[in-house]
Image (cartoon, rainbow, N blue to C red; front, side, top):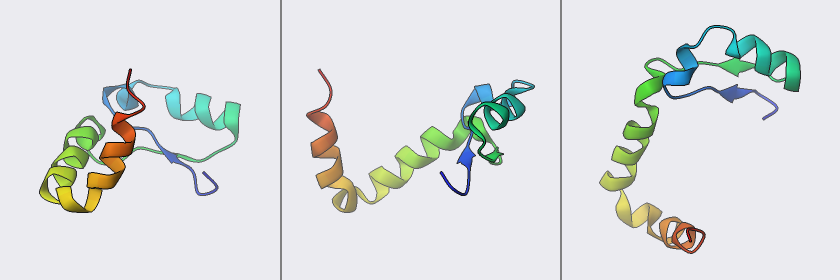
Length: 65
């Protein structure tokens, strides 16, 4: 997080969050274009490249109760 974090999802549009996070944790907070679409765009990349991410997904599955 030395370069900061990205605030994603619909909550990224809530006023004041950037400043609160920056003041509280001392990290730069960036908001990507269309933050509410970040999750679905990431999922799309995973599905398009499933073989590349399969091992990570299998490991993540073991973390879900």
